[in-house]
Length: 137
Image 1 (spheres, helix red, strand yellow):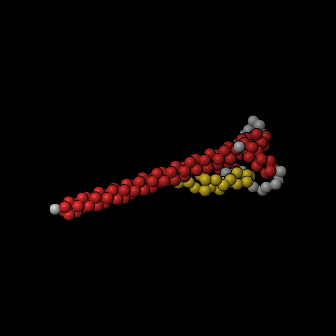
Image 2 (tube, helix red, strand yellow):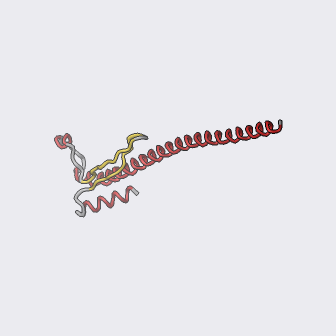
Image 3 (tube, rainbow, N blue to C red):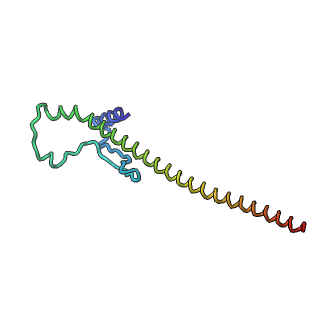
């Protein structure tokens, strides 16, 4: 569960058990492309553009951060879960498509082989009948 994992990560980070938290997951790019991604989620890095500006908040910024940070981390973990699930499904779909194509090719080869064996058997029987008829004359 993304929420339980995120809460545990925040708890360990705030307790000082870990210095930083990273997520490693498969990012879904397309059906044929997935990318292993390393994403730092704690501590949150302040973008340079945001650090230069000063905003006026109704509530103290730390109070807002304490309320928003857990939800943000939950969403980051959930995003990683969903990206990995989508990448896994895409990889499965690609593998099954390749297996279906290979099975189709194998069926075609076996059908041709069966037809050749059947044709050889028919040809052998015709030769035997013709040979038998020639022997009777």
